[in-house]
Length: 118
Picture 1 (cartoon, rainbow, N blue to C red):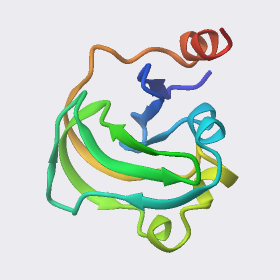
Picture 2: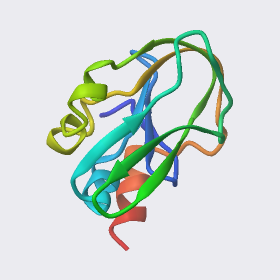
Picture 3: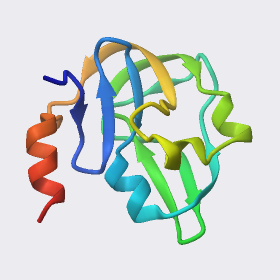
């Protein structure tokens, strides 16, 4: 069973790797992703607050952090190849965080699946 948790705003958090990304459902809803704006290493993120943007041919969407802490790495591949999110959203992590707190809003993969099937 997956340890990955989700926010209802369609971001995921993997506690094993301390990485954050957007869900497969979110990338399908957005369509072809053409640009990703990510914060810098060393910046702080707060659970529930936006840390970047994803731009698709349809819209620009803010990305919300499921955790609080300090960014220790960003996925630089996404700057030149944002389409990696469309290819495999669950593997295309955006930021890696030294976590100080986890959002109480996180739900299980099963709960998220039920939410997105409505």
